[in-house]
Image 1 (cartoon, helix red, strand yellow):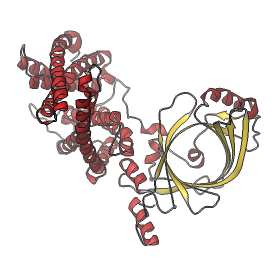
Image 2 (tube, one colour; image 1 turned 90 degrees about the horizontal axis):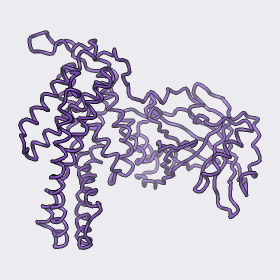
Image 3 (tube, rainbow, N blue to C red; image 1 turned 60 degrees about the horizontal axis):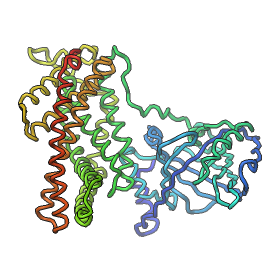
Length: 533
């Protein structure tokens, strides 16, 4: 086993200086895999392509790495080092899942040219949230002979490539195994020929949908194991609900963790949003289920989730403001001012992204993820509570969730009703914000209850979600107006003019959303929504 820091230290000792970070190349791999027999004969591809150009054979040696419990594999990620034709240099590659449509396996390849004992530090940073404190170790080595064919059209544009690999496994439980696999890699413009090529190879005996080479060479757990420990049994216990809640939230967070690290100073808006939702939702769920859990564990974990949610929230709030500035309907007179506002907001987002990158790269975040991972396997249940009057001693972990959850949802419902009542006929912005928070808590509690309650809980969840959406848009408009007025007060003249006009627009938006909120709140306050609890 080789810890990441040790790999880099070894490289430093051997060279006598710190190695320069290798440059990264990114590539979207779109391929179809085919399992074939060793004596398989490749059909005549010229019936589909104008030119089939054979390339020189390659001798490849590929080493795969993972943790002892296959954390990378379980998330659909692979880490490998590959050298070609005996070269001292090779390519480190991290493959991460990409959206898949149709018959291809789509993955984003991140590659760095380096020596075998110099794992690129950027790669270690991308994988840190998944691997955390565990070392990586060599799983297996594959020696392969690759025959390549470039498939071109009449103008000599490469539309696809066929890689025909004969592989020998070295090490592991399947040492000495030989197998053959064909990969069809699509290039731009080659999509139309995917179907016919799959049919042609299939008619020759190739089995489309072949496994990844690592799965053929090593005994691996099912990738489906990464999924949420979801509850589908209406007779599920409270302990099963708790386990599903924690493990599900962790998986949602980790689904976006490595994507936030691909470009730390400009993470994708959607991944920031979804990571924040996962964090804030789990914090709410732990509050909802706190009576069934160790109170010290809940307090500590919710505090850490609040910290992470705040760091993510700063970037998310900036992204919401960017969306506001990009809305249609701006005056031509605003062009210069909008540019200045975007520049100011960009600087603000850059600072917040840097803070997020530091948080994700620190031990505090790693410790939080490890805490959630442990709790998702063995939840910190609090069955030792004493049965005193007014306590929640009846929340035993083996209690049927169908009986336990409705009274807990009812508590949240009462808090929502109290928040609505305090607001009166003309609630303040702060009071509407508090109603939104209570509606969100009801939504999450109802969603958590849906697997054991059924349609009634799902109906409540949808109704509360509508309230949350409307009041969430209202809160965004309030925050946007505040930011814009601050910019108008201190910015240059064009920015001040644009900010003042947009602030007035957001104030008008708030009035419309207040009117909409009355309708969605009225629909929420019906026996159809809350009769089940």
